[in-house]
Length: 320
Image 1 (cartoon, rainbow, N blue to C red):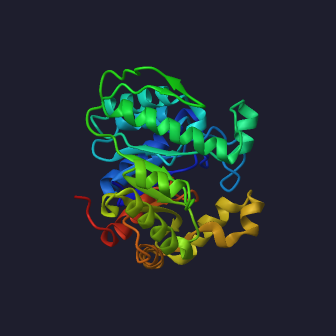
Image 2: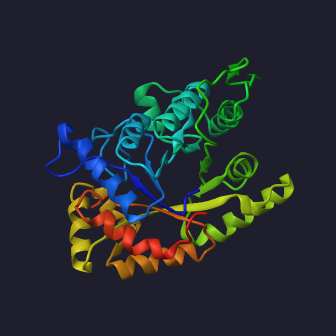
């Protein structure tokens, strides 16, 4: 599972339009693979998120994009960070994941969460429901999707989904790992302990030890070996050869994003390779097994993804 992942969260780059956008994304994915990242992620959204841009900025449907990236890479795993369960029927999601696994020769990974972006749901007609609704849907979906991915024919007469002997053919090339995103200590981490191979934590860095403790408690109660679960964390990075370059590239990215400027401390790790390495090492020291980074400000700039890989690869253990 993920030791060093690279997420591509945005698709609005200077001088790039729809005709050349995919080429710019491919360059990042290929640089990540060549540099030693083990997984390439994209977001599963249809509108850009408030912290990264405006709703009308570019957002490519994630599974179409991942399948296309599979044709330009050969080693990295391919995943969303994370799939919004509310956007697809779980039987369709299982078929989509299997198709990605087949076209990538066994490199698909399922990252999934309950869904949270209410504005996007309301604008596009996806039912949002209550917090409880979304987590009930997620758990029912996990029963169906995991069963179909594991060669079973699941049936479920649930509150939200009803399936009968759901067939998934062709089968995945291999075992598709399951990652659940989020940091809720009662619901999300319990589902990680029960169903998942990986937890991608969403929380403030000081809260990481408490989240890990909660996960360990769920594992003990459910009889799950905690060491079977990889725990990763998403960090935003703006790296450049000099501190001044990194700050300038971040400032250019933030120029039309006043909400982010007002919360500059949320911009992530900014600076030279040594500065970024120190920040990521601090996160890993909290007990994480892996790190996922994105570079929304300058990931499209030639050489930045390679520099990230060169900086971070020595900090994480090699996946066995």
